[in-house]
Structures are given as C-alpha cells and as structure tokens.
Length: 119
Picture 1: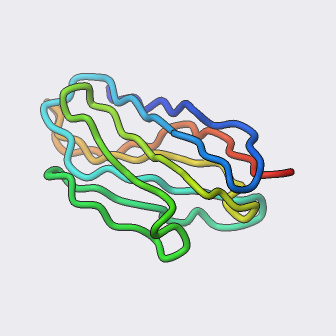
Picture 2: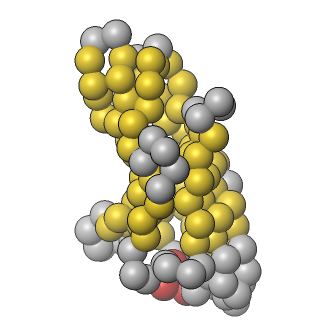
C-alpha cells in the first residue's frame, strides 16, 4: 500500500508564496519520478512540474521561473515552492509518484490540496 498526502495549500494574495508538500508512505523500495499536477474547476488536470530520481526538474511554461520542485529522498517527500503567485494559479494541486514496491512498479495520486490566489 502506497499513500500520498499533500499539505500546504491555502488562500494567498497575488504575488504571494506557498510551499506544498507531499509525503509518500508505504512499503516502498524506491521512488522513481515524482510530479505535481493541478486542476482548475471545469478544466483538465495539467502537469505543473516533474522531478526524476536524480533531482532534475522540468516545468510547464506557465510556471517557469516562479515555481520550484524538489524532493527529499531520505524522507520520501516532494515539495513545490510557489512564488509570485497569480490568480490563474488557482486550482487543486495533486502530487503523483511512480514507486517500486514488493508487488512491482505502481503509480499513485494524492488526494489534492486547494490553492486559491485572490485579493
């Protein structure tokens, strides 16, 4: 059983910052790729950023230069530092991970955390 739990969402004003966390727990041998996605009401779920096992990040064009994805392999935790937030960043943010367990390679989603950018 692998579980992802996000935290850190909330309401901030435009230009503000938030830091999201995603804790991965369970019978995990290794965590491969990890990622953050977001979904605004009535829209599809979009990729925000990804990070591989060695920590190399990739970002959606809409967040480049404002968001930073990182991971702590010792604690099995994924982070997303979000700066210079804009109203269009408002969405539910989901973390995702591909892990190696005793039953093979599996992918899991977290339950999501709400981020609202509003004055």
